[in-house]
Image 1 (cartoon, rainbow, N blue to C red):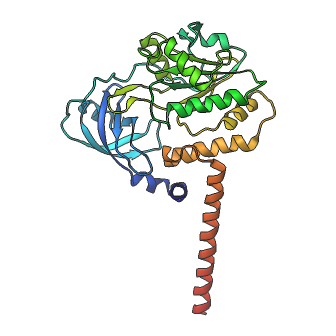
Image 2: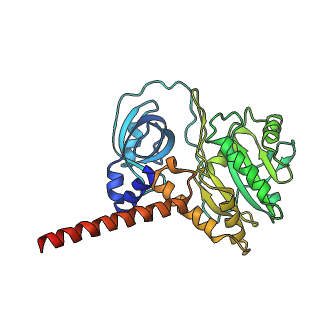
Image 3: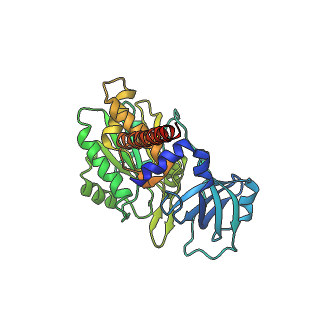
Length: 329
C-alpha cells in the first residue's frame, strides 16, 4: 500500500510533502476579487487529475491569469482552499466550452442553518429543507448523466445503503442535482427508481437553475460543464441536524454508510459505534494528506498498516544500531 507509506512521510514531514508538489494544469475560471481560480490539473503527488478551486498567492497574481492559460505552480495544502504560489503561465488559449465563473455566494460553515431554497422533488412535489425539521438529514450533490462510477453513481449507491441501514431512525436523504436544465422531475424519477429511492425517506431535488447552483456553491460545490467529462464538481456530503443546522461537511466521497450513521447517532446522544466514528475521522485525515486517491479506504486499516510499518522500521533501526555497537566494542 504505497499511499500508506506516503501518508506516513507526510505525517512526519508535512513541510517536505508540500515542497515536493508541483501542479500543471489549465485555468478554467478566475475571480480576481477573491484571488481564486479553478484549475483542471494533471496528476501530481498522490492527487489524480481533476478540477479544483485554488487560492493564488499573491492575490494580485490571479488578476493576471486568463481562462485557458496553462499554468505551473507550487501547491500548499495547509489552507482551505489549497494555495498556489510561484505561478508561471502561458498565453491563454480558447476553451472548448463556455464555463460559468465562480458564483458570488457566502460559504456556509458548521452551525449555519441550511438555506431554505425552493426545490421540486422526483415526484413533482414542492420541497424545502425547512420541512425536514425534526429529522436528521444527509445531503449530497449529483447529476443523473454522470457516467463515472467513482462519482455520482457511487454517492447514490451509498445513499441506497443508508436508506436500508437507517431503519427506525428519523433520517432523511437529499440529493441536489447540479444539472437543473436537464434533471427535471421526470428524469429524477427515473434516476430514483434505478437506485430504489423511497420519496418518503430520500428526496432527489431540482430548482430553477440560478438558485440551485447558488445553493450548491454555498456548500463549496461549483458545477462546470466539460465536453469530454460532463459536469465537473466536488463530491461534498453534509450532515444536517434536526434543527436544520450543519453538523458535518465532507469534501470527499470516501465515507461509508455505517460511519455517517454513527455520527448521526452520536450527535443525538444515542448509542453509536465509536470505532465507526474513529474510522470516519481517520479516513478524513488520510484523504486530507494524500488526496482522493485513498478515498474509500478504511482509516483504521490504514492506521494499522502505518503502525506495522513504523514498528518494522523501529526494529530494523534497533538491530542495526545493536550490530554497530557490538562491532565497535
